[in-house]
Image 1 (spheres, rainbow, N blue to C red):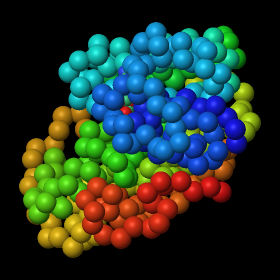
Image 2: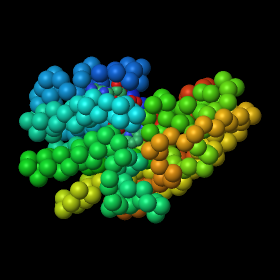
Image 3: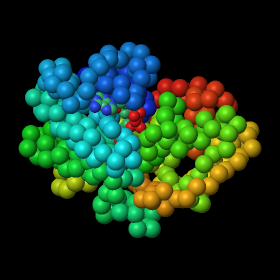
Length: 328
Ligand SMILES: NC(=O)c1ccc[n+]([C@@H]2O[C@H](COP(=O)([O-])OP(=O)(O)OC[C@H]3O[C@@H](n4cnc5c(N)ncnc54)[C@H](O)[C@@H]3O)[C@@H](O)[C@H]2O)c1
């Protein structure tokens, strides 16, 4: 498509799939990442790599002078528990880093920003599921507060400078190249333990639910959000889209699925529930379907098989699962 795209966090789990999707679509892709949790091996072939911190003058200058049309921002401090233990560190990366990039983007004439927000960390969870974009918001962690504040800053930059942005609020993302730290990290943690023949630890009774969405489907949502008409920015949620499945899966059920796919006996060790963890979680995706033309295409069983193959070398894998890029 000939766009010039800067993907921050493109050496990480989700960002590397997003960068690969742009490369595959024919875009000129630069990945900016400080490799703090990401790895160079994740950067897709065909993308240029710049090692820099999103808070650095170098990152800002790159955006100001690089002729980019699109900024896709996935770099972040992603660990909710670190944000609770050290909110200054979280805000430094997740808020000041964003502002540094936005200052570069407006100077450089970037036309659109795509921002990776969270559907699991900003909404009030009151039992009514799945949650739509307009649901009440009251983050429980500094990580969630930084995501929500980032959305407000993006809306402000759109109004002040005409810098258009689209917010994608992900549920729990899983798939190849995932590590155990992110919001969907439980898949990777369970997979590694099961593959090693070890018991898995579940905090609480295992009946708590999450909305697991496959990373290839998330990459496709990013492509769709990168072009096309945007509705007027009337309020914070105007250009925000939940990206999930709307389906709740129990954590125990997830462990059972993984064990079955690996052909392993499941042994669970239960620990007390973690403080602050939500009981149930799922996001409504009607808005992304109606306005972006996006729907998740990968069922849990199929997605887990691809993930297991990539993480542990087990099971079967569809040919397209490695790059996880499909186009409508
Ligand atoms: N994984 C999920 O389920 C999930 C859910 C909701 C939102 N998100 C968001 O999606 C984005 C990607 O998350 P992920 O799960 O792929 O995590 P990840 O840790 O794999 O990727 C983050 C990347 O950002 C890089 N990075 C971190 N700090 C940086 C800095 N200061 N400067 C430059 N690069 C830096 C890391 O090296 C890494 O490559 C994040 O913004 C995260 O908050 C993830």
